[in-house]
Length: 302
Image (cartoon, rainbow, N blue to C red; front, side, top):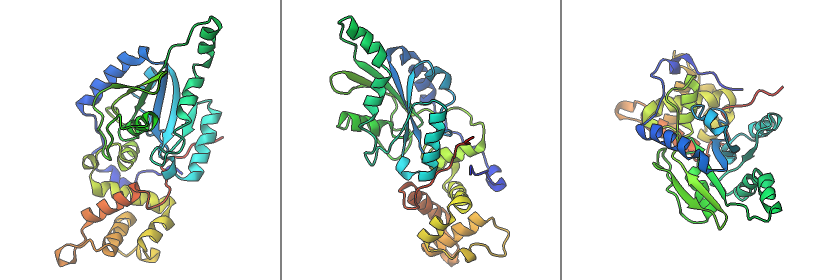
């Protein structure tokens, strides 16, 4: 069910976003690894593989790692179920959660402590108090790292925002009396191996809209809905599905965006469709969860 990218979207400039602070953050992250016990790697539950930073995968594999799949409340429940099976079969420690809805947050620290259980028991056998737990949270931009820290600390300890790139430096934050957590900036990688990756990251908020262009992202999103969730789209915008395909040569997503523009009154002078305004509406509605629970990647299960 993973959606191929249509040719008319492939023809534009590749989507990439790798500002200078990300390269600096990557180097600092590598230098801090010796100080931490467990990596908390946040991913987007709607794109569990596309939200993996392969540029630092080898580095992260040197440590205990708990994969936290955030925004699961926005993901397709059937896809989440399949991903749980996939990670279990692969022997990968993961936990699905939704920080904004405060679901699954309280399990994070107990799950992280499990990695240290055997080592701490050896300390206790010698009558020595085990050292405090040191965690590092990593992930792509806007995936919820700072929001997770604020939930764990139970106060506003890290800056959050709806746009990627809010956290610019690494900071230690105390979690009670026996744990510390290192917040790190969201890091992408210089070049995506497939153009679909850029679209998935951008439409879910990891890349600034201006990099790809709002209309281009809206067309990708509509294309995905027409392939897998057409009823969610037509029902929400009250579109007549039979009217979405006309005699023009325009691809169906463009016709659909025009139909949405008409429904929402996005018109310019002379009755021309304001597709930029309509695109912003579609992206906003999707990101606020108004269009339903949607996933962009499904695992291949044997």
